[in-house]
Length: 238
Image 1 (cartoon, one colour):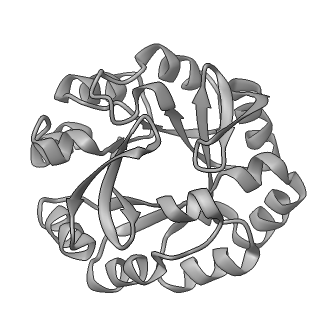
Image 2: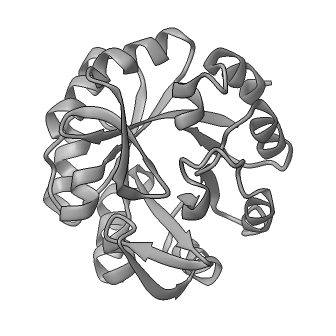
Image 3: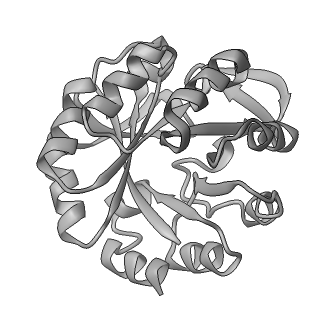
């Protein structure tokens, strides 16, 4: 299993939200590129980046930070948040990102998703964030009428290889991850699932690995010290 330490970007700082609420934000680093270098030094191969302003507004205000991380570390970066045009996809991949995560645009415009997959193949992932089993969009500020699991199956059928799946109710809440959800998602054949939201203990990581999950994202627990990154990486690689 790959472990992806996360840096959520807002006003060029590394922050974390509580259950996706922009009014409940904690700043963890004023130097995201320096934090990324520390993450690499501890043995990580991947990093998960989210432009929170982009997710909400459909812009790329933290692009320079993403580019700096890609240029100054050897980490494979996946980036999401407000990526709603081919130009933006190309911009991030051109800056060195390994994978670009589509969210709102993938829900609302499947023709766009098809074209992105045609052009960029496995460099395209889709973020599927759920609230009560329904897919949320626009930086989690809106909840659609689309059910999570059938939507994931439709993504696989279109050719998506990787999906980052979040239970919003667990994100940043330090209540443990939703193991029952990820157990169900593992049953979707032909799709690599990355767990995101609520990974708050070494036991969470061990459990996700044992069920055969492709990857897991580690956020707040890494910053608070609840999970030691080096130990987490060791367990994920075992």
